[in-house]
Amino acid sequence: MPVFADDHVIAPARVIPRSCEVLVIGAGPSGSAAAYWLAEAGFDVVVVEKKHFPRAKTCGDGLTPRSVRQLEDMGLADDLSRYHRFEGLRALAYGRELLLRWPRHPDFGDYGYIITRADLDALVARRAEKVGATLLEGCEAIGPLGAEARAGGRAEGAVVTEHGSEVSHEIAARVVIVADGSNSRFGRALGATRDRAVPQGLAIRGYYSSPRHNESWIESHLDLRDESGSVIPGYGWVFPLGDGRVNVGIGILSTFERWKEMNTTRLLQCFVERAPSSWCLGPESALGEPTGGRLPMGLSVGPRQGPDYLLVGDAGGSINPFNGEGIAYGYETGRIAASFAAEAVLANDNRVLAGYDAKLAENYGLYFKTASAFMGVMGRPDVMRALVSTGMYSRTLMEWLLRIMSNLLRTDEIGPAELAYGAISRLVRSAG
Ligand SMILES: Cc1cc2nc3c(=O)[nH]c(=O)nc-3n(C[C@H](O)[C@H](O)[C@H](O)COP(=O)(O)OP(=O)(O)OC[C@H]3O[C@@H](n4cnc5c(N)ncnc54)[C@H](O)[C@@H]3O)c2cc1C
Image 1 (cartoon, rainbow, N blue to C red):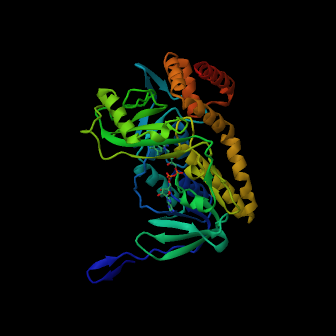
Image 2: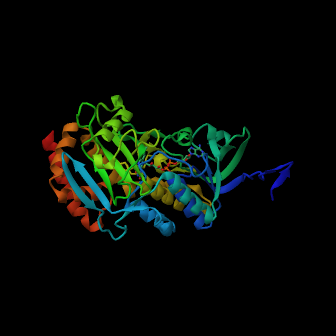
Image 3: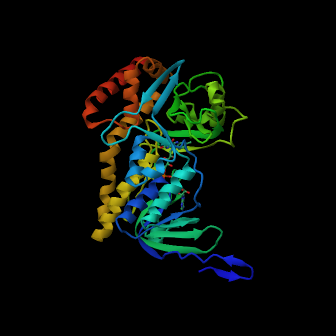
């Protein structure tokens, strides 16, 4: 019931729960997925999100079939159909062009979507709320709860503050799922660090109005160039949103020896200047300033589990090193963490959480390790140029590459994939 004070209505004060079974820090893809699966199974789950939805998040907004599968599993198929669907990838490099459809796969559809993160993240967070999660927007976790927690290594819950308020609240939890993204202050407070031997990505994107906003293919340019025209290891993209806009961006790898010298804003400008004129990209069609961020990849951040917490999504460095995709892995690691948290609550024994990392290693370990090693050599411009220029003459090789890089191989294809990987490795060696 609202309270009336003179001539205006004061919204009722929000009640911050003092405890819950599982507390999730952050309502991006990984946090909302964890919250959805826990709430759907009947657990008492609270999610704190420092922003209010809809909120922007720097991203290419590209959802591959892996992401779509997770969204459909969360009951969002009808909601997705309102957004821009695409059939596959148009790869361009060195004057050649290849249209590569998403592969057929028994576990995944052969389509993706482009959805702004303002829309997507609100959709999934509301879905989690609908099945029973308590979502506290405008509520920031400022650190782990408890004296021992503050000394590092434990999280008995979190200390939170509401936006615009100095007052802090304590939320105690049996298990904490840390889903606060690539900067992960909360994860760092628990002692998590990034393994610098694993490559990371750096990407920047902006929105442009474009007459080709309704295209049913996403576009990747595999011959990204700097101002001097030299090829830089990385790629540029144009992702159509179907609402008058396209998302345009570039991504580079830390395995490129000059990556620290790179001015990504300038690289994006160079890409925009060289992009096919039919997209009509330029200063006059730009919709605001571009923004960028780092991409922690290949499970490079850890430890991802502690006595009472689990790290998911970017907080655990879950991005696929092959293609910079992180949304699907956010949903998937959030779902896996939810199952371990649920088991721990049911068993009243947090030792169950110790199995989480082994499960991640089983699902992604070998694939991410291969991807990181591959990206190690791809950081060399001559190797990248040799592979891409050869690949652009072979539809078969590029179709395999798309399947491998987007982690969409069928189990019966692992043999041929190894052959394809072997062919690529030989090519890479011969380029060296
Ligand atoms: C330029 C760029 C382009 C990209 N393009 C793509 C793409 O096209 N497709 C793709 O799959 N991936 C892409 N990625 C990667 C993708 O954005 C991430 O992998 C994904 O967002 C990870 O989800 P997450 O839930 O782990 O973290 P986030 O999406 O970062 O969500 C973290 C949430 O936690 C909240 N939060 C943070 N700290 C706190 C706190 N202390 N208390 C409460 N709340 C907190 C934040 O507000 C945020 O909502 C891109 C990344 C970049 C930088």
